[in-house]
Length: 414
Ligand SMILES: *Cc1c(COP(=O)(O)O)cnc(C)c1O
Image 1 (cartoon, rainbow, N blue to C red):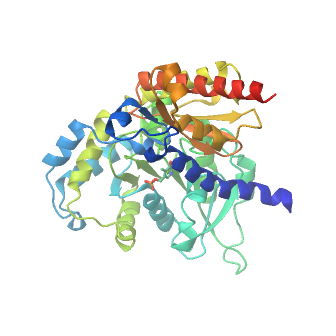
Image 2 (cartoon, rainbow, N blue to C red):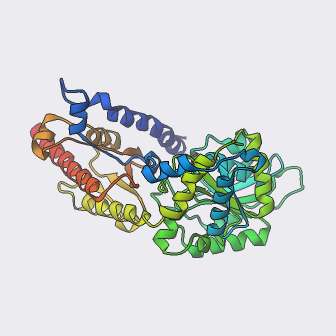
Image 3 (cartoon, protein in one colour):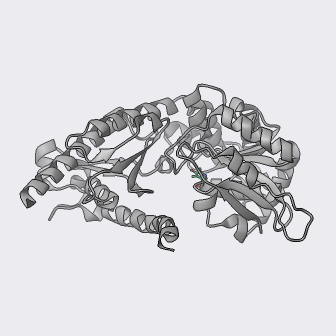
């Protein structure tokens, strides 16, 4: 019982840890006395590595939003939305695409369209975003049953296990009907792992053999395309449908593209409306999305570089408090494990987020670095367009400072 319960407890306590780290990182809670106000705030640099969702639109994007032609999109009359949908469909190699408010709604709509009958079943990895972080919306709102396969460290799953989960009993009244397989690329919880094209090809072959559909939660599929140095359509040829976030590394303030065959997208339009996602003059948001798809993909490579630079520094950090698998750092997400049992991920994140006088004296300035505690005694850091190579160096200095400070405390305590 205890063994079975442990992983669940990790999942739930993670949320608590996140809030603890965020609270420690809150601006009003800096770890030194009698200093506050804008002057002090300006002295402390902030390096926010919590997520690539924190990016803010730059001047060019704001200008595009300001100038966007708009219309009523529920009537299909917003020219900028229509253009974005065309750009996305062409880029993804899909027949059609739909602009939706969020990745969560996009995945839910995909599930609703693929699994049309209440009690239909989808198969997905037990560590995927759809299963862990979307509140079970597919069950709660769509009446879709899930069965899971074990997510492997590289974000894939075992194909034999996948095959074994496919139901064959329908229409026997005992069984749900298998309809859908979901994959996630890059894999968020596993640290931005890129699914190999050969894996996608095999999943698709299996799906075709049993008449199932394949949906990719491709919130960060552009990171995968950049890492593999292929156009996104090379990846997406293996899936029926895909959901792609514009509001993460691509820098738009809002929005996700859901793409697939034309009849899938027509049905998706209906679901989006039922879920309250039919927006009106939304061309102002779509204009940001067009800029994301045209201008922001190439630069993802820089995020991958910065993540690798930081990962290298983590491995070389002396004293060594961390373990990191450098080969697993494929895109913009880094996970590293704590090896010193007395320093928890939450405590480490709190220290990275805090500035004290000793740090200001040692480093010449205070640097607040925000990261989240993550699964399996690890810490997660995510690179994005608001993090420069210089910010990355500042974060490395802070890491070294926290590690050496920790060592001094340990020696003093002995
Ligand atoms: C962020 C994310 C989503 C959800 O996107 P929201 O726009 O935050 O709802 C879905 N899947 C993955 C893999 C993500 O990283």
